Image: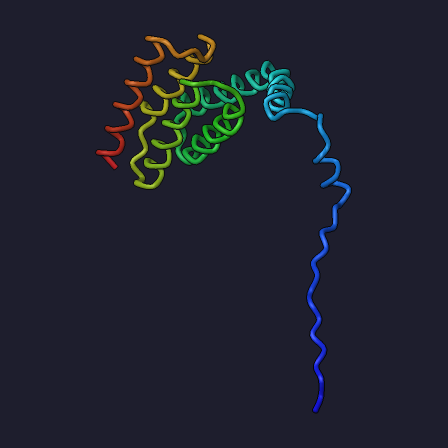
Length: 157
């Protein structure tokens, strides 16, 4: 007869240096880290707003030319504006840019391009940027008008 030897499994907890460091008191709070990141980001606001103004100028030129074949450029520029504006609280400017992306995409897909619709969006974005991207009664009215234009584009497409 054979005798089996039974052994018990043991688990060992290994503490890494990172786990030891994280267990120590001190460090930064999440609120402090967020505040510091926002402060660093805010240092770039003026440069970003200059870039956004340049993109709006490019949109104005493209809309004024209304040249066949430049339609895809409108969506590209508007989405570039959104990518940049999304880092800051640009409120109504972001909303207007999003609306332009939406209508440009719909017009491109349907093949029914409407340059005045693009022009209205670009003018609204210029006004919003010039007013400091603040949400107020004027920008609310502009966005309401853009929603109306976008709804018309959806109906026509």
